[in-house]
Length: 126
Image 1 (cartoon, helix red, strand yellow):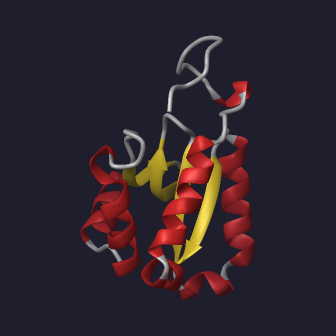
Image 2 (cartoon, helix red, strand yellow):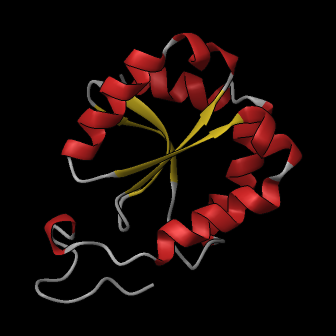
């Protein structure tokens, strides 16, 4: 799975590259994002573990994979993650709105059931 994730990082789509330029190097609220990160049995496009947030960049192939994506999202949500999806064309033509949407999700409080080991009994700082 690590090899597949590594290969996906080397072969990013234009949309993934555009969104990665927003997220990398703690550019969003000082939060660390990883790309093509394994959460077996899946590999997610982008993840901020601290905020339990997964960002997916979906190409045209996802129009034929609705049930698969729903199953995948349900699994990830059952692990406490929030999953947000953007179409590749949305990322490439309207990156400002994509960024604002990501910020909205980051600024939402993380429910206590999702905080995990971040800080016992306290809020995760933004």
